Amino acid sequence: MIRRTVEDNNSTGSESDYSKYGARISGWISWFLSSKGNEYFCEVEDDYILDRFNLTGLNTEVQHYSQALDLITDNLDDEILDEHRGALDVQARLLYGLIHARWIVTARGLAKMLEKYKRADFGRCPRVLCQSQPLLPVGLTDIPYEKSVKLYCGRCEDIYSPKSSRHGSIDGAYFGTSFPHLLFLVYPTLIPPKSGPIDFVPLRTSGDAESSRRNRRNREEQETPREIVQEGLSTVAVALKAERYRPRIFGFQVNEIAKLQRWQEAVRDRQVARLEMLDEHGLL
Image 1 (tube, one colour):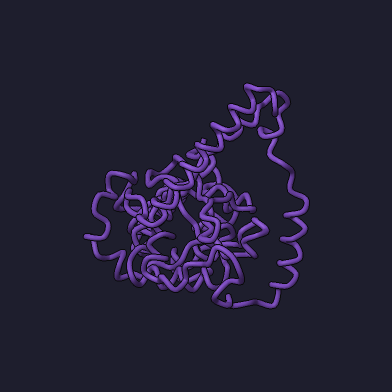
Image 2 (image 1 turned 45 degrees about the vertical axis):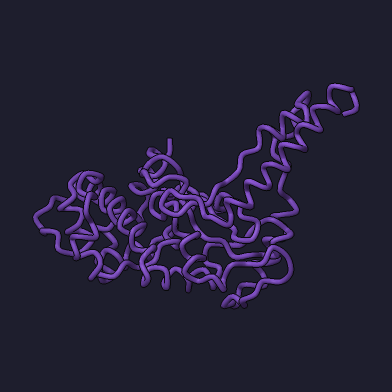
């Protein structure tokens, strides 16, 4: 499902046609970043892309790898027929996304994404008690075409779906599972407090006030998830059904968060046992 959604989003619409619109902008990467729906991405430096060591293994992930790389670096032969450019553009987007996932966990890549984080380019947490904490993009898997991108809140340590359908169709593998947690590891002063005001003051734009009011209205209009209000569903079943997001860096759980989650799960297990006992005695 995610494969079809991502490919449809990448290959349809006038703005995805580089052969028509790319000539107005200098370079494929500049055109890609300026296209609607690609605001989460940052620019990968040419030196990083041209270093083949950084691209190790990607030739097995991307069809027409050499031509897709030539398109990204603006070295594609002009003899490529226009009818082939659409399919090649999809592969170029895939290749750039996978390169992007590797780039943003480097020192220079983290610095670029940090600027976007401080501007709250990825949005703000919809949870009221997080006080509009800026979010960070994260993938639930590093394998492309499996899961779409989610947004991680460092304050409540939970993930959310992007509000925009354009952003919601971006492949999560283009950001990877490690990025937000590595960012906080490299910049520990940015780890948000669990309560109280946000420590840093995000860079604001002229539309921030209106955006804040719009976000508050959206939060007020949000409906309760349907699966939680199903009739006949016990409190115990709801508690057991709840899933938890587990922050990981290169597949390993973050130590301090892992210890906290083990404690939280032990508390939850005790609460579930208590609910089961109350349910057995008909007190729920």
